Image 1 (cartoon, one colour):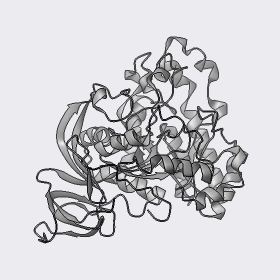
Image 2 (image 1 turned 135 degrees about the horizontal axis):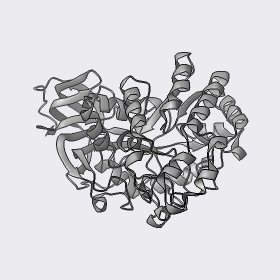
Image 3 (image 1 turned 45 degrees about the vertical axis):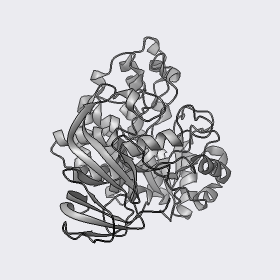
Length: 448
C-alpha cells in the first residue's frame, strides 16, 4: 500500500529536539514538515491527537518471527499484528529459528515470500554467519540484509551453529571489506556451566542463572571488541544482560573501536530474585539477572553507554516452554509490550518519553542503518504512534496478538496505551482494530 497524505496535530509531539506542540505534515508517506500547531492546510485529512502524545514508531531490530519452517511458533501475520498493536512500526527479523535459516540469498527469498502479503508493519532481515558460509557473506549483504549475525555459543537450533573466535575474526575481515555489520550473541562457551545446568531437574531458576554467569558475557564481549579493533569491522553486541560486560565494550568504544550494544525490555523490567522456580516463561539467554544488575543497566542506558532497547521477541509453541529450566526453550515473547514496559520503568526513574524514543526508535534505527526510520523529522517515513502515557492496565495474555499467549508479563500492570499506529501515514492499528489489510513493506539495506 502506498503512503498516505495527511496531517497529524498534537500538543505533545516527540521530535529529535524534544517535545513540542506541532502539526506533522505528511505527503505520500513521508514527513514534509513539522510545523507549528496551528499550521494546518485545508487540502488534506487531519488527525487531531488531542491529549495523546505523538511518538515515533518503535523500531525493533531484534525479532524472531520463525517463518518459514517454524510458523507454528510465530509467523509474519501474527508477529506484525502484535508489533502494530504495540506501537512498533518496523521490525528486523533474525536469521535463525526458521527453516531454512537466512544464510543464503535463496533462503532470504523464502523469507521475503513468506512475509510479502502478511506484514502489517515494515519488515527487514538480518542474514546469518555460520561456519559453512564463511567466504560467501558478501552475497547476502548484496541481497539487502542489514547485517550478519553469529553466535559464539550454541544457538539452540542445529541449523545455526556457532563460530569460534578464529572464525569470528575471519567473518569480521570478510565483512569489513564491504563495510558491513556483524551482530553477535556474545557468551563465551567455555565459561557456560554445563555442570550446574545438569542439576536443574527441579526447575531451580538460581541454578539456571548460575549456569550462564556474567563472566561468560564479559569475556565474550572483550574478545569481540578485540577482534573488531583488529579488523575494523563494525560490530554490535546483542541483548547485553550483564553489567560486567559493559566495561570492555565502553573501553573499546572510547578507544575508537566501531562497537555498539543493545539491551532488552526484560532485562530492564524483571529481576532474578522475583523469578519463581519452575517459571520457565522467564527463561532466556543470556538470563535475567539480579536487581542490582538491573539498576546498573538503567544507569548505563541513562548515560548513553547502551545504544538501544529491543525486545528479542523469541516465542515458541507452549509445550516447548514446559518442563524444567534445563529443558524449556529459551526465549521471551514481548513484541507487543516493549513500549509500555520500558515506559513503566523509565518514568519511575525520572526519564521522559523523549528518552524512550531515543532508546527504542532512533537508537535501533541508527544502528541498523534504517535512515528513514526512528524519528519525527522532515524526510523521515511517517511512522507515528498516538500514545496515552497515563493509561495503565494489567497484561492479559489472551488479549495479545502474538501466536501463543505465553509471556512473563502476564498479570503485570504496565503504564501506557497505544491508541493508534501509523506506518508511512497509513493507520494500521486503531483502538484494538486493524483497519486496513496488511500493508507493510519489505525493506532492503540502503533503501530503508
